[in-house]
Length: 318
Ligand SMILES: NC(=O)c1ccc[n+]([C@@H]2O[C@H](COP(=O)([O-])OP(=O)(O)OC[C@H]3O[C@@H](n4cnc5c(N)ncnc54)[C@H](O)[C@@H]3O)[C@@H](O)[C@H]2O)c1
Image (cartoon, rainbow, N blue to C red; front, side, top):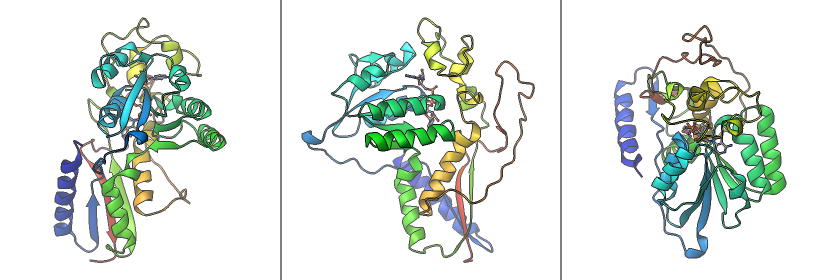
């Protein structure tokens, strides 16, 4: 897979630099870009047939990777924007069935499981409907748009006895698994502090994604896209930059912090909520609630860009 050797190279390079620069405390920097296990062949009886719901920025990448796996086949795609049907067909095959209604994928008995890569405000309904229809689902992070949504998702998956995997890829990344093993074996001694950083103050980052040029209510089911919140007039910027509105996104916490926390908990073999937490931030830009009606908390709280991400693990050993 495409990130494999890059991640390994960057990991080794950064670790070597960090080791050379260590002062009083030993600090190991881990770049948690995903590194994938080598795919293994699958028997015909083990074929997994999936459908994908949401073929946007993340869904299209997941789809391109998923169809490369042995024994995995995409049977259908769903998106509320017809342009993404074209995209899915370009990725998979020209005659891939595509629809605006995800219920059609739920009703399709040939489909074993689903990938869900819709905006955060749709995660709960999608997961509840999928498991209730007997489908396992890989749903993108953050798991839910609200705590209550998360509770409903857990209850539905337990009731239906279906798998729900949340797309926080650090908990399944080979490189994080290696770090987990090393730390469990005591390779870095007694852990004192973990620092994580991840920023997206980039002029072309997710807060600023451009809408598709042809987007209109002719090729997008805008009403359904908005979900259950009070309806707004069609706005292509909301479609593309939904992260900037509370009704649809989860701000920095759901967009980026979730990666830091899930990866850190996995690497440290922890599975519990924090006992204490604090937060700082502020709206440094778009302060006056302009056309984008920014409602994020502290979107400029971290001045680093996407090029700067990772962890440092500090220990007592010098
Ligand atoms: N794991 C990661 O590293 C990572 C990276 C980026 C995004 N994500 C997550 O992936 C999800 C999607 O993000 P994105 O950037 O791809 O968004 P996007 O806006 O680019 O794509 C979302 C797509 O879902 C479609 N959609 C919305 N509601 C739908 C519905 N009810 N039925 C069918 N289609 C629907 C939209 O039309 C759109 O094409 C988010 O939850 C985001 O947090 C995860």
